[in-house]
Length: 499
Image (cartoon, rainbow, N blue to C red; front, side, top):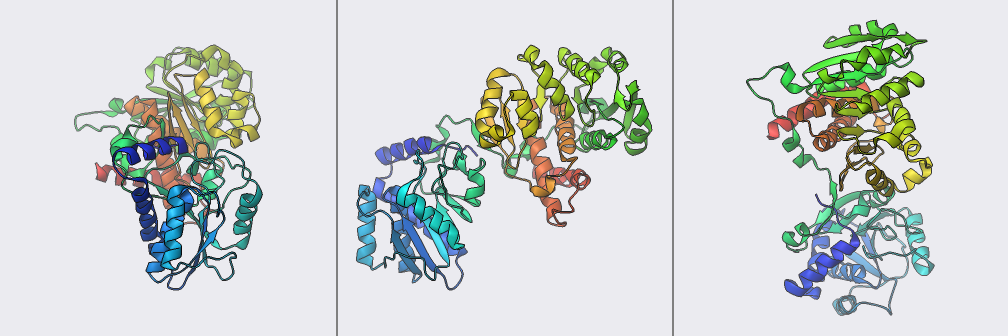
């Protein structure tokens, strides 16, 4: 699904009003769509208070109030702004008065608050009575539903403009808004539902937006093709370079994940000291023993691999590899090759040291978490977390041919001008080893389809959705990366059935 900013949605609204649906009718459509959605979530006895601002978001609230009142629901309007109202909002406020909808100035006895203070056009910090009202609503502990976007959230970035509503759910109109899915806006929005209000889809399609929401319904189309007349080499030869005495499990999980994701052949290049660990845990893998020193690869490992790289469809480097000078030189050698490359974990640490020489490297996927990405960009982790979208785009300006998988609770995938937003997954995935499973999954797909963009999107989805499936059976406290690894096969089976 294409995601829009508030400005882009405003332009769509204007075009719709000028050519198809008059403004009052469009507001009526919005209010009635909200009414139908709210009715589905109401318990038998609810006291609903709708807090209305003076803009068109408030107007939607007045329409909603009128329909709820006509349906014999206990609904009240809390008019936050009474002087500066848009024409449409003023007319719908008057319609509420005529219909007998009661007005109120407190939250006593309320069981549901509906936030219609600010819409997607907010572009300034929230102050004064608006700030006070948002804080008061949050402090009540009553469930809040926001209309279009939680008041106080920037629709283009997800930033909180001083203070923002903390909603249980958000009903957004006609199209998803970027700020609903990007931290911290995603936290404020709760469960997001997109409501059709009659705007022609062609107007949405015409918007030049490069930000997209990853949706399960589209994932089957990204599956690599499996032919009846084929052999293991047709599905890619993967080389996993990594592992160390302290972190042999990382490359074990990564290589198994690549195989579970469909890779045809696997070779693990690991320190000699952990060769037997891999041999006894990844039966399907061939093994290259690398010279090591104190359990980490040594300089001699580089020469062992130098002449072999062109045998492989894709190389995954970094999982459990550790840090020393040999790792930096190894990563440089891999970057100097023409082979498709996925860098994870400490290979990203090495990349940060040599990156200046590889701004034009293509066929490259990087999978950093915020700390690894901060090191690459030379900024703080806080700066990354405060603006994932901005810094991801900054990276792409410097490395326009790379694919960036910026991991967080809302993983963002950057490829060319496009950004893909993943909202699947859960906090049970916040455990050592999850990143190794993800890197392996992406690598296995990349080996098959040779498309970095598709491999990253599908790999991120498979990993996150598998985590969600495991969560249905296990506590997030006990969820393990190996559980996710095993579940990937079930997600793939479901996607196969959809094709």
